[in-house]
View 1: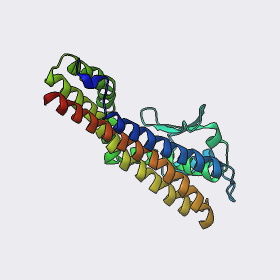
View 2: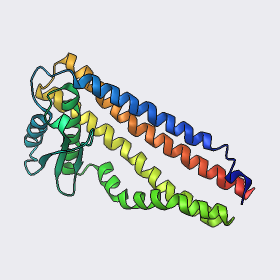
View 3: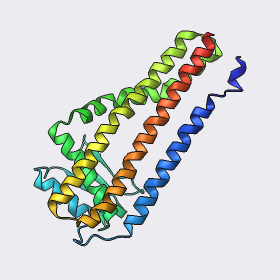
Length: 230
């Protein structure tokens, strides 16, 4: 068994990715908590605002449901359901409006055939397989000193990385749509928009941090494979 299986300095890349994720998650939790305590002057709840936006864009067939969990909000394109957590569904806070309209933005992407969203949906099964099998395959390659298995594992993990990279424009575009819709609909005053933008920006940074962490992990796999070759 290679000595570096027990002593692996490349684990520093893993720690760097974890730190990035913790910082990003802390930022989004802080922003959401802060602006969840600030009600919008218009008084719309997240569910009401999302419903109005969907209807105005001809998406009456998209249902809105309340689900359990904190920040569990998402749009399900298969069943055309926008699912909002209770604190977003029922609240009229700046944070709730931003999150709800962001998810409505995903429904609009789906309805208009937004390219990156379609690509991301196509990559889902490949990314799931890659993230599940990459490390077992790679570790087998290390244990048996079999170079082809190492690169199969790297390719498998690379599929998950590609998925995360494709996710970035999808999320940024949804947030951009959200702010345009909130502005055009008169849901927020200019001062209130500042807080909502901070929530959406912090949420987007979690995806950036996740992508960077995955890239660092991929680099780590290349370094381990290269060390094995040497």
